[in-house]
Each structure stands twice: as structure tokens, then as C-alpha cells.
Length: 295
Image (cartoon, rainbow, N blue to C red; front, side, top):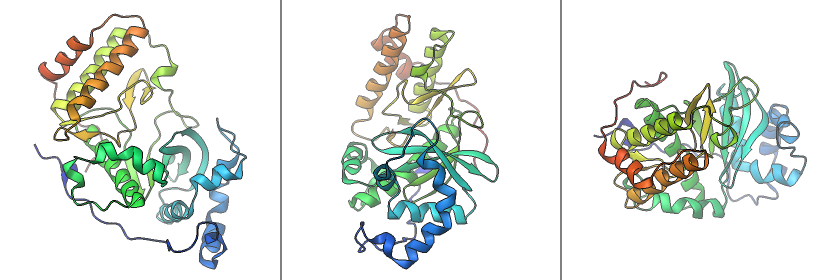
């Protein structure tokens, strides 16, 4: 079944001049004025939250020219009022607590370095949705963000708890904050759940629904990419999810099931990878109600 998310991606307008050397771009009047307009709105990222980022080099590595232009665009459009403090960081992206006119949101900023580009390749090569895509690393990252948006919507369309994407531009994604007003919900790895067997069965159901109903596989399904919110698991980081036509889809599916089985075994119950995989593939997946917010 063809999903709405399988339609062709529209190219976005390009902002900024890549010919300006990175170390000099802030000297250009246009960018200096732009930065002055949003400086107060992003000042919170330099010293609040779990990660105390007082090192200017860290700021510069995340908030490069393209990223600041993207944030400016999203702020102009009313999607973000302020960027408050970091809540998660990784090799491919950093996530920030932000405030919008409707309340707190999460802002995920993907890095645009060559190292990130290389880490994405195995999830892109062989995916029919990327046919004919130009191989410039910055363009790959920008499309990766749109891929995460579509995968999040695809999950929610099939009733799988995942953040609702609100807006995206270039390498920046704005989505619902899963958590309280001031902090995100913890990862599954950081909590002790009251009923491991029940949670394990729920996670197997999620993988099964993704595979059978949404015809895709998360490809990095583990306790690190699952939030524990209001006594239920929510999945995050779905940018690397691939459709079932991807040549490595079944390999990724086995890996996802294996990781969740390993988590369950460490948490005190005994489950088997082969039996769990058969449940995912052979047992009919339920048809869940879509989550709200979709068109």
C-alpha cells in the first residue's frame, strides 16, 4: 500500500551563500544583522539545562551559517519564539527545549558535516525514495530531516506513539516535546518500568505494526530511542527508518528485535529472539487508530 509519505519531496528554497568562507561569514553585514535579530532568542543554549555549554566552539559547531539562517526562517514564521536549552546531543543531531506561541516544543538540529553524511549513507543507498538524489552532504542532511518528518507522520498515521512534527526547514526540525513543560520524558534505558513483560509486548507490537501496517522498519529501535512518557513507550529518532523495499530492511528488522529482546532479558524476563521475530512477522498486527494532528 502506498503511503502519503511516499510522494515526491518538494525542493525547498535555498538561503545563504556557500561561497562565503565559514570563518568569515559572520562579518558579512547581512548575516551580522540576521544574528543580531535572533541572538537574544537563542542565548539560552549557552548555559542552561543538563549540558553546560560554555565553550564557544561547541556553539559554533552546531549553529553554523546554514543553521542560523534556518532558525531565523522558522522564527519569522512563528514556529519558534525562543531556543531555551539543550536536552540531548548526539553524533548526528542536538535537541533543544524551545518555546513557541502554543507552548514548549523540541527543536532538533542536524549537523551538516561530512562525518554525518557518511553515517547516513547505509540508510539512503537502496531506498527507492532517494532515487536520483544529489550526493552533496548538505543536501543529504536536509532531505534526511524531511525523511524524519514523513516517518514520524507515518508512525502516527498507524497509531504508533511518536512526536508530532510541526515544521522543518533545511537541517532544523520542530516537533512536539514529549515530556513536561520544562523537561523531556526519560529514555527507557534510564527508568525501571513496573511491568517489563507488558512493556516488552507493547514494544514488539510497535515493531510489528511498523513492519506489517506501515511497511517500514525503525532500524535503530532500542531503549536509547524510546521515551517513557505517562507510563507508555514513545519512539523517537526515526530518520533512519527504511521502507520494506530497502535491501537491508530485514537485516535492520532482526537487529531491532534483537536489541529489544536484549533489553528485556537485562530487565529480568527471559524472551527469545527467534520467537519474538516470528511474532513480529507472522502474528497479524492490529490496526490502530491514527494519532491526532494529521491532515
